[in-house]
Amino acid sequence: MVELIGYILFVFAGLFFGLFGSGGSIIIIPVLIYVFNIPIYEATTYSLLLVCLVSLYGTIFHLNQNTFQISRIIYFAIPSVICTAFSRALLFPSIPDYIVFLNLSKHSFLMVLFSVVIFLSGFSLLKRNSINLKSNLNFLLILLGVLVGILSGLLGIGGGFIIVPTLMIFANMDIKKAASCALFVITLNTLLALILEVTIFQFKFDVQFIFFVLLSGLIGLRAGVFLLNRINLMLVKKMFSITLLCLSFVILIIELL
Image 1 (cartoon, rainbow, N blue to C red):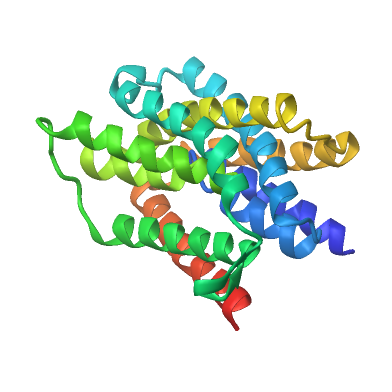
Image 2 (image 1 turned 135 degrees about the vertical axis):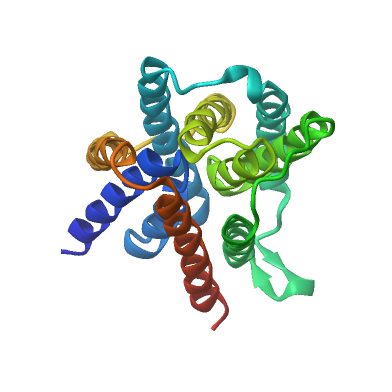
């Protein structure tokens, strides 16, 4: 019964990818850890694989729909991919199992970091309007690409919940175009991190588990893409931000209380 609930939640993760071009990992990570009791390292690695496959599928779909604008995100994508490799190969292994000055385990530290990041993303998207920064946009995208790359490597996330608000607020994109661009960057980031895991760390996946989780995610993705063309984009934006805020509080409560 618990596993069934987990697979249903993975459908919602796919739904997030379809609607927002991001957000799947904010469900995938907690479900893997709290429902399936998978340790943080294995959970982040499974998340990378699932996010990579689902976002690749979404990227191909958006290419066919002509909503993809690679010229707008090249400054974001390159530093993001480089920093993902650095973070996964060097930063993640260097974090001690217990961080004394914070009185937190590695697991709790990463989950608290995870919750803070999604809270800030949700808050910025809920409160701020589009800002036209044509002169400084490329530099800003480089900096945020570095941030997303580091977080992708540490937390096993695609970083779409940073990419989408960034493109909507600073590049003045609507959520549909921002979602398609986010999926492309997510695919590159997670693919590189996975290559490192398999070749350097020789991680072994449970193929049967991956199959059922991926199937659930793809069902949700198709539903999300279907709904994206039929519901108000401002409503989607508000739903996305509120979901991020709520989930950040839930994770903090679980880890710190």
